[in-house]
Length: 223
Length: 223
DNA sequence: GTAAGATTTGACCATTTGATCAGATTCATT
DNA sequence: AATGAATCTGATCAAATGGTCAAATCTTAC
Image (tube, rainbow over all chains, first blue to last red; front, top):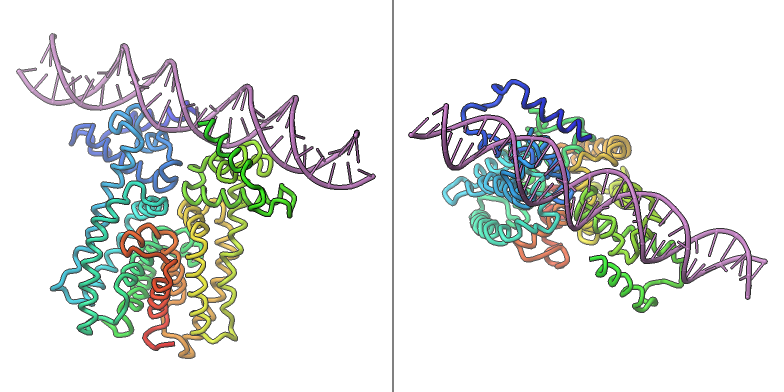
């Protein structure tokens, strides 16, 4: 077992180092990214408690002590991964602005979220795991940053609805519905694929999912 | 630590044994249920790899060897918990039948799913964790039982839509939307509460969530 | 009451895991 | 080439973990 681990690492190191941008940056920075990628995979799969540093190190192609040279504890690493992913997570919502056309803004938002679910399913699962655990790390961020942003969008949506530019719905639940449905395709891709045989990777499937959400959120009128 | 564990257990045992139906059934059977409840809590929180047998035993008020007397391995216990929850999970969908009124059937289904999310959030999270891990245990069940059931409902929904009894939507994505939104309130209750300050426990909040989903699924016409 | 079985426990074990550390190796700069 | 800092490794540790076991305690049937 220990032998296999060592073998794996040596294999990567012995392999051509030109595949990655090894010479471009200092070794350290490239390693940090490799570690964060590996950590995302493992944390998203096994959760914080279930994740093993060895597994992350192996996946990153480093020895365990070497990984701990960059991140001193498992907690630090978990925090760093969450932090890195958080920005990407909050950006799309901010693009719903007062001067936007309501239906266009929501269409773009849904499309972006679905693309994100397609292209970054692990990040989606990481957040799911963190939030399902009661958000011990992100709790503050949810209550502060996220709540504030959502509050803003809720009043904006409400205004648009009052002006008849959007079908009347509870704005909070509307947002939750968008989050839930889009993330569902990432978090439950196993189930989705077991039932339909398709993934968001299929363009037609992606389009159908997108249209379904749009119909549900924007009502019957076509866009 | 070991001291605290022992204390905890002794505390429960020393406490009034009349609270639970201790005398009714043989101790063993009552313990099995207590273990399964505790296991559900812990597995739903920490996942399979992260769950600690000690934690489950403590929560169930038993010693670790005593728990292992009922379930010989962690795997066995995990399987038993999943199995116990699975039935409850699949029942509501079956109640959508050809002779049902389409809109009533979907309304009932959504209501039931949302009630389930409110009353059994841990079960919902357990499934979420299992599926997110790639469904290593439930994989077969998803591909066989669940797929077959869904296929049946999909054709039924499609027929109803052809007959104009339901708004035209992709039936698969319609079902996913119902699953995603209802489960969202269970799995992400932390986030939902951080943003709205409410839970499905609030009757008004429950009703609003229910109505939002109904509006999205059934279209604008009131029921 | 007592024997047989069911249940419970404390002690214990092998393995795994997060983390440490001293020393080796590599790298950049002069 | 030499120096100092950055990076990396093998060996190792203490704690935790899943699981075992023999013995103790409790139940039940006679």
